[in-house]
Length: 215
Image (cartoon, rainbow, N blue to C red):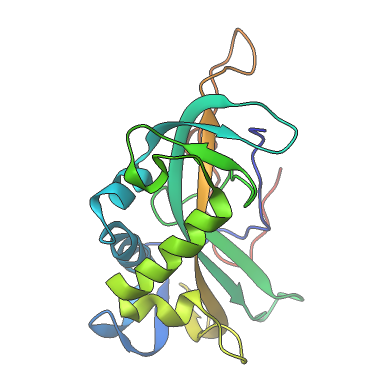
């Protein structure tokens, strides 16, 4: 139940990469990528106190199909995804997916059909499916911060086109998306020697966009 789920990743220099939005949003048009991640996270946390608690992590239990209830910690992830066009030296488009809080690739994600319940949070005080919670929170996010709407709901042309500028490279085009997911870290260790791993315990090297990870 608690296996990490990884998407295709290409790390990026958060503090040195510029992102230019298609129009002025969040008080200006061009941001350092690290700033933009913080703004997206802020937009999610301002939905409500209980949502903010979910972002920080809340004790809960979870169950997936063909599994049993497990105790652990659930966390709401605000995830920025970028699909960047290839540049000189790259033969393919690059896909980046980053958890706005940890600035790491998201993992330990629950499926939409999983059910979670927490005595400490009104969002899931009663057992609820993850998919239903996420749909509700996306609607509430659009109300709390209308600037996020374009990044949550695609038009017939897709998600908004942005531009990326990394050190030593030229501007390149990308599509940007904001997504919400829920992760679950079980309290039950994998074995008697090692504690359960968390996102922060799975460090990923941060390299310029376009360079490959060595595993």
